[in-house]
Image (cartoon, helix red, strand yellow):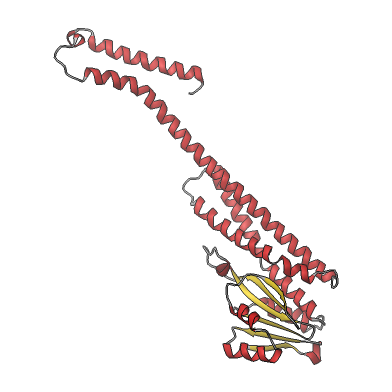
Length: 300
């Protein structure tokens, strides 16, 4: 669907929005505004990563927006984010997207309908700003999830699916962090020395704050996973320690029982009247000796 959200007569530039466009609609807009076939091809790829590319008479931008309702176990860029493509110069700005975005209508109401937006650069700045803001609330939710799993790890509630939950939290954080890193060139070109103003600097500050937030989340997740595996290893070592102690106690006793269980006919101790209590006393004595030896070494 093609919509003209702003016109050159009323706003000083055209804003053409294509929502879930057909091939015919894309071709029509490409012919009208002389868009290069390479940028059209990138525009139609649903899994394309963020990019900023200059052409002869326009600039082409691809940005990723967080999906409105991603699956709980979504962990890839295509599952977690949607793509929005932007073609712009001084005379027009074209947005192309398959999913419906609230930010498009929001910017139209806040910037176009109020007459506050008089250049395509200002409109681009607003679009990128709102796109970055889509990561803010999910980032806080991921932070809360990380706090939850941190509590479970340190309280050692083994029944909770800690590792699986941590895996998906880490994957989501890494995907958003990757999108932020790849979007740096876009923000840097918008807030260049030639066209920097209070709005572009605000966009850069928002970008840096969001990127730093997800960098910290990524580091915290990695540290928490490391702590989890360390605690799991420690628990395994404790179990092995207990089993080793038991085996040390029972090895000499099993050795003695094995000797007297061979049932040879001529064994001197078999006919001894005090043989049985003497062997039992020997076993008890060995066990007590092992116990005090462990105690002295500090292993108990």
